[in-house]
Length: 71
Image 1 (cartoon, rainbow, N blue to C red):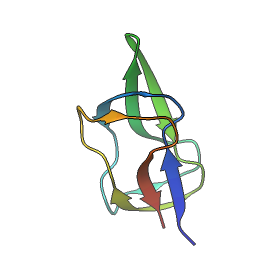
Image 2 (image 1 turned 180 degrees about the horizontal axis):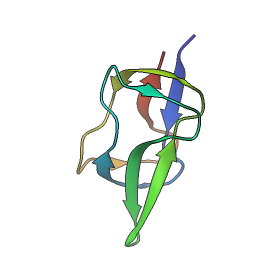
Image 3 (image 1 turned 135 degrees about the vertical axis):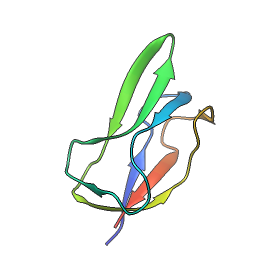
């Protein structure tokens, strides 16, 4: 079952930490968002393999946007 990695704030994608195919553990940083000059990691809500990355560095994202999918 796939698990979505969602943005918890509105901001800009500062860095994509993982690539498609990477293994992640629950709590690993997948994407780093920047908002109001602060960098905030978006963590994997579950362990698995990254199946999709749906954002790129520099993208503007809204709260609850899906940034990646864990399979």
